[in-house]
Amino acid sequence: MPRVSAAFYAVGVLCVLTGMFWGMHMAESQNMATMPAHAHLNLLGWVTMALYGTFYALEKDTLVPKLAWANFVVSTASVVIMIPTLAVFLSNGEDPKYIPILVAGEVLAVIGMAIFGISVFRELFRRRG
Ligand code: HEM
Image (cartoon, rainbow, N blue to C red; front, side, top):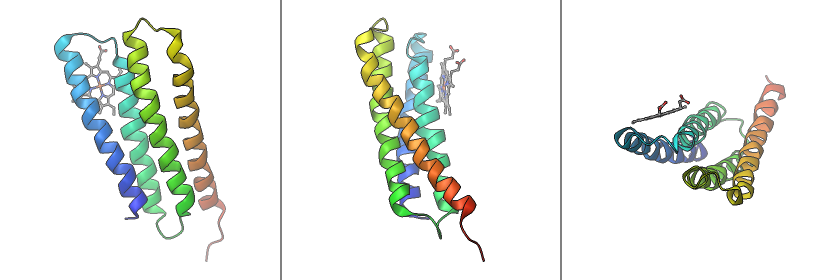
């Protein structure tokens, strides 16, 4: 497995462990205020990261390491910025002062996916045989 795939899985497993404890805390306290942040931590931080890591593992002989690592850095930064900000935003009456930071995290998530898209289409159209 390429190191970049292992790195995606490492971030993913940290996110899902955090997300699981978070979910257990929500259930025990019956306070669902931060539920969208829990859901996005698990879906962006675990499911999406694992899909990125799986793709690059399948593409191990032809991947472009700089593209894959750029995808990793930008997507990890998006989760680190967006999820805690979303949690604070939801816990503080959706105070609009947090929106610019949230948007920065969202934009990074989109850029990370766009970089992934370049890798996907490069793989689709590369010469074979
Ligand atoms: C120990 C593991 C987990 C626990 C205890 C947990 C707990 C919870 C709880 C209590 C809710 C709120 C439910 C409600 O009031 O409607 C919730 C929502 C949600 N969780 Fe988790 N969760 C866990 C793992 C995960 C994982 C692994 C994912 C995704 C891969 C996930 C995705 C979601 C989503 C998408 C929602 C929102 C559902 C909706 O909008 O109705 N959760 N979770």
